Image 1 (cartoon, rainbow, N blue to C red):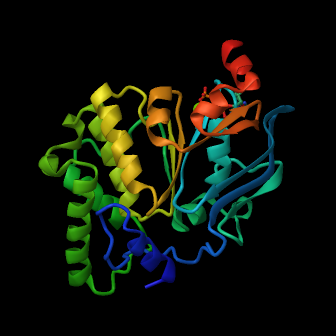
Image 2 (image 1 turned 90 degrees about the vertical axis):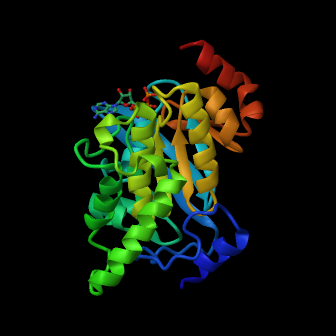
Length: 277
Ligand SMILES: Nc1ncnc2c1ncn2[C@@H]1O[C@H](COP(=O)(O)OP(=O)(O)OP(=O)(O)O)[C@@H](O)[C@H]1O
Ligand SMILES: [Mg+2]
């Protein structure tokens, strides 16, 4: 068992999969300095327009960070750079101490333990909730299938554990297409969790959710922090206030302000950007 896993167990976060043998090997990332993600001077231009303009940002291991900012600030583009979907013109993106994401392909980055959730849920509508979770792992080439029977047991345990985490244990046999919008979002988060990501990127996860679903999502994210690192882009300030200790405000491809929500909301440059939109 890698030392970081023990450390997480001692910290006592969450109840979920602590104590599990890991099915997925993504232990290569060096977290010795406690930083999971470090973006340095990232610039992305589209036809001369800088969507990201020397963006520098650091996320600690186990942190739950919210990124806010007006439309067009570069939030989604930032996630595209982290996941390898977009290559920056310049700058670097380190996962842990040594791994430069800008030199890796999208599948390599995913295999290293970065999971991303887009806004629209993409579950297999004609499969049950249980099967969706199972499939999420079976598609994962990193899972060791040498001892098939044993893995099947482990997969089943992992699925029930994840079902509890995302609070869909009562819906396991239900067809995913019949879930509410919020439940589909949780299922998709569960599918990411099956792959044991170190870092989860979530773009506007509570858009379209009911107040009750939003509240449950806040609880879910808080229970995941510590075991995972989360970067959450959201426009819903009440939600942000309920989960984030540190908020980063992006504007025109740069960090405009960073700190507690209370602090950044009172900074004149932030007020100006939000009132001016
Ligand atoms: N593929 C692309 N081609 C051209 N311009 C793009 C492309 N992707 C993003 N942009 C532009 O880059 C800027 C940043 O876009 P991005 O989607 O990152 O903003 P955002 O902060 O996620 O906004 P929102 O809150 O509306 O989702 C915008 O002006 C957008 O029009
Ligand atoms: Mg966006």
